[in-house]
Image (cartoon, rainbow, N blue to C red):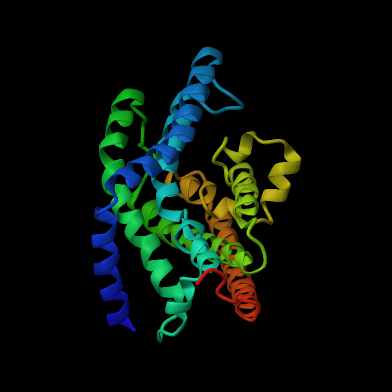
Length: 265
């Protein structure tokens, strides 16, 4: 199995380099929202001194860290797999001795991340020079702790994205459903604004949902803004949602294959 992943990585990595323009478009898409939020909230904090205790530097460190975490935990499964169900090209992958989503699509996600990070580094360096965030609270221990949170965040994100993409077995409107899912993710993950600034009702709901593991929790761990009990609690929540996402994916995949008829193949 390791050799399968190794070979898929080599092929997918080479494929990613063939679509550099597409990569730049995705990178710009990921950059626009956080950079706009950063500029707006930093300006407000500078004008007022702080926003609910968060200074301009707090917003700078939060959003610049979020840019990197977002690249590591996000997934593009629907773009890499959804069309295969609709045009019938999935048929060729089903006869291979490897799960289409857990091999081809997973490695595609990882290769895309690796190449996107290469493009993000110079942009991030420019933003760092412009906003000059103070990362004095970041420690090596925080970074190591955040790795597990980032891994959990990506695992949950990928499995939920895969389960949602499998809805394509039932309807061609899966893209609309994914846009709705993306909107909910932005609201509850801390991408739009740190969850501590959201209304109490949203903060309470976010405590039980998996989306904060995608961005908010890893960022807060890196910046040293969570206590040990809070970190352990989020790890437990992440593991529970990872198991739930895995079960949901397995069920939707199994049920979807029974309906698959290779329309258009």
